[in-house]
Image 1 (cartoon, helix red, strand yellow):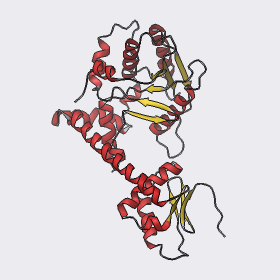
Image 2 (cartoon, rainbow, N blue to C red):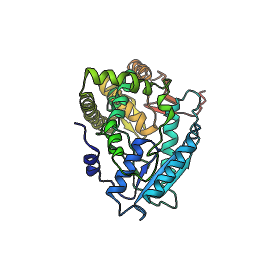
Image 3 (cartoon, helix red, strand yellow):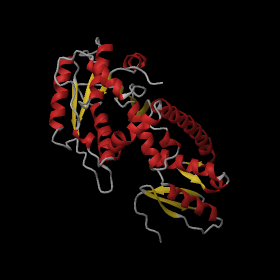
Length: 331
């Protein structure tokens, strides 16, 4: 069941110092205000901060930053501003480029001398965002990891990230914010890119979500429950992969014979685990299927495996499989 803002914030118990990711939009403003109310004794005392990332991608970026500065001054919450270059590389989506730049900025902000030792960062994504993420994953034919959508808590670069609003509907967040007596006008800034129909997520929000709510009024609850089930199943697969890795792992490589002894499903599972944990790369479905086909055919000492996987290559070297993303000259 979706929750109220009050219930979600009451249940939110991060490690301090805490920083709230503040874009200047309604959701992040509401999260900062709610945290400042709950931990008013920490605001201005080195326990509660806000981080604003200026992506420099639109003319409204300056307006967003100015609004964040004004709001934080009124709430007596120290603000850290990180300016980044979020222009996408060739073949990279604008959303992914912005996300990668944002996390780099968050990591850099924790090293800021004015906000030492930030332990937790809170992000204001909510239940509607979760459903949009699930629908995007379905549209790509994602597996359990994708269908798990967004976790409520995770670790990255030594920082604990939290999404305390994940069980709260977006409309309820705005309704709560409207009831707050904020000493600033406007309360938040509308991001003009949210109305840009070129972005798939915006089309889902504007065109698909109203239909889903009309046909399935409880879709926020039921779809979120499905994501939780997928996350539990993915957790079990990761436990199995860790166990299998103890059998097939050889330093950072895979023992070929041990890998071939596994069933096809377990083999695919541990291959994904190996590539992700050892080399931070994720194979496509087609790449993984081809790799498994070559593994099945690899029955002689001289059989060569050299296959593009993720951003590099999987290669057979004697009794093991290895992965690399630097040129290797074969004689």
